Image (cartoon, rainbow, N blue to C red):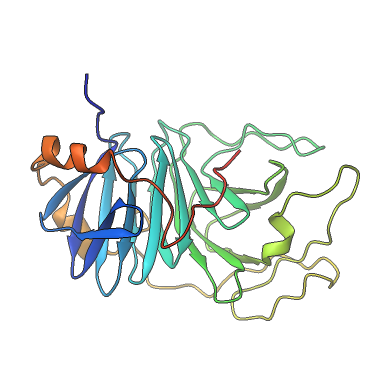
Length: 247
């Protein structure tokens, strides 16, 4: 029994997938199946991924995205916009952080359970200094560190930036200082905790993705069998060894 794809990708411009160790192959088909363990790299291109659970992800230019598992993926470079279906809890990882679309988690304190029927949309990006920015557009986004401690719940129109050190694993009993900054500010991991601030309102997108990209959704998968065989030798997370998977 073959491995089933987790979704399909429609790309524009230069987009590649990892065929073997440090071997990248151009995505030639307009509709391209995505399998667990596959890594996609956009250069000057962009890509729209429609997952089987009805979630959607738009990968921005100069980005690298690793599909670790069916419901878990890791951004190691660049930016992505997403819409998470209410039917599935998709995990989006970036640096030392995990972003989910709903909360059934505890962080040493009770969190109000968010509606299970609520879709969530937003964007996730890695900055040059390795800080991670999460922008909320629709629903609520839960941000966790590597210990699966809840750091924040991002509301619609909120934008938070986390220094990389905040999400790292820490020694038992020790908690690093936390500062959440508005996009555009300089982050200092040693500074006292800050406040969440609403980001300036930006042009609206449909479910977190730019309107034009939705015109491409619905194209059938082409050549699944052949690409599945090639994807079997892939796996990884960018141009070097992949970071640890999300816990």
